[in-house]
Image (cartoon, rainbow, N blue to C red; front, side, top):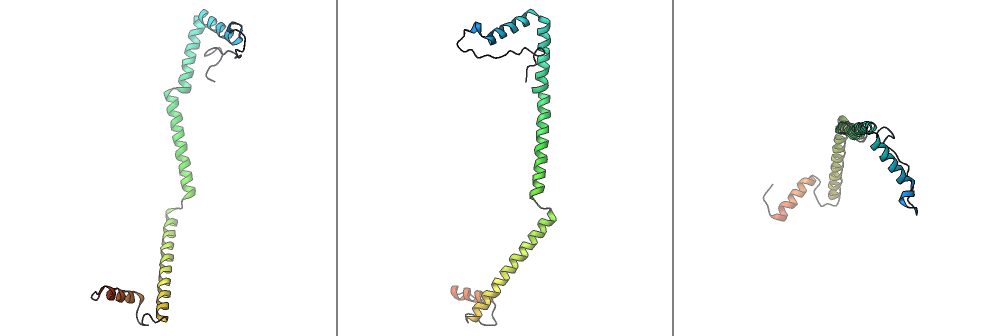
Length: 149
């Protein structure tokens, strides 16, 4: 992928060394031929060197790195925005949900107080005209011998 045969360098076919001697291996012979060709043709060697440097700069250079890094950051930001939008409600909706939640919890607490007050009145633990809060306040005062709250 990095070397373009004849343009930025020479590609050599690979053959495993196996049991043959290195001088009989086709890969070794290919390297030797490529080195000989480069050394014998200095113009071609200079051209491949410059082409190789330009290719490396274009693929792995700082400017290319910056562009790819910037593209990656923009993509990550866009994905984050999409994920945020898909997993969160709009602010008016959040406010409505929050208010609904407070109302529902308040209603539950109010209902619980009414039921407890009714139960205590029916069990004759508090007088019919006394509220639960007042009854609790009186019990607290008696328990700790406090003056009127």
